[in-house]
Every structure is written in structure tokens, then in C-alpha cells.
Length: 164
Image (cartoon, rainbow, N blue to C red; front, side, top):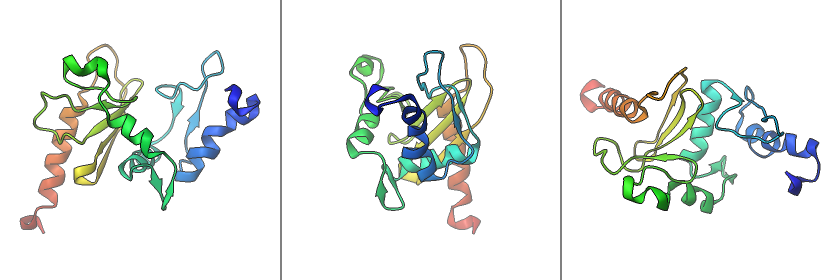
């Protein structure tokens, strides 16, 4: 926050640096009571804007040929956090990774999970972004990898040669 100079510049930064550049025009980012962006919550958006966000990651941080996210950031996102190594390498840098025990999901898939069931799931090996907008309560939540499995099954069936 201090690195940007003043509150106005800080509040405008996400929109100017990212949202406007990828066309996320229907997204509102709010701050917590301390004036900080949290981004795992307090994001008000629609499925189309979430898809644009996922597409940015699918394209390894490039948008219309311009680098918006560094290669180092993408690598950080996709690298299992050391703290999860003994539990199946299920978390990278702010994104969820496919756990080692899930053999039915491509290992290159990863997911951003927002408050109460908002998901952006990226599956590079299938050039696919899956968006889920939901409203989940409680600890159980929604199983993002089961959703991924079912969407992939439908996606692969619809693109098979015998269906064309």
C-alpha cells in the first residue's frame, strides 16, 4: 500500500494494472476494514469476468501478446508449497493444485477458490477454463475436482470425432 504513494493510487491500482487490461469491466474489488484488498473475498464479479481472469492464467500471464503476470509469478502459483509436501502437494502460490492422489484429473490443472464457492479452474492440457459461481455454506463446500472431472468428461465427449 505504501509503495504506491497514496490511497487513491492504491485503490485504482488493481483496475488500471489488471482488470481494465483484460476487460474485467463488471468486477468490483472491495477492501477490508483496514483498507486492504483481500481478493479471496470482497470481489463482486460475474462468470464472464472470472473466465477472463482464468484465461490470463491459461495463457501464462499473457494478454494480447503483452505480459501482465511475470513468468516467476506463474511458476510460484504452480509450485507446490513445501508445507503441503507430506499431505499430497495440494497447494501452490495462492492457488489449489491437483492433489497427488487424484489420478482422474490432469496434473497441470489448478484452481482459484473464492469465498462461498466461486471457482476458476484452469486445465492447460485441455486449453480449458472452468468457472463455477455458487453459494456454499459450511465446511464441506463444493468439490472442485469432481466438477473438473465431470466437465472434462463432457468436454471430451463433445469434441470426439464420432460426435462431429
